Image (cartoon, rainbow, N blue to C red; front, side):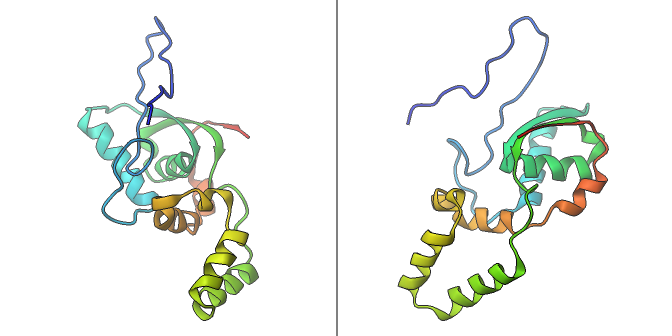
Length: 160
């Protein structure tokens, strides 16, 4: 697979940045376990520590990265100066309790072939495209981060 640059460094700007490839995304290896937002956030903190980045950072994130950014800003406010978020995940209203109940009943009572059919028909496009990341995707989207929003005091630039 051809690797393309995600970002181009603005020459002469004096801006330092990292384009981090989270485990299982892009060209990196799948993690050995099913991780959630907390575990991915800890990975980012370890990455910053390894590079001796001690000052607060500005996080630019999209989709799943937005969930990690929310978590970091809320739980580690001293590490995050500002958030720049493009269509972040975790903002949308959660799935209704009725739909969740129907899905759980269907996935326990229906034969495997019917379960796969239902998942293909009802599942989101992102879930359908998750491939090997499906267990991580499932864990992450079931984490309700809305309570964290009240803990974020850093400036947030939101692009939808």
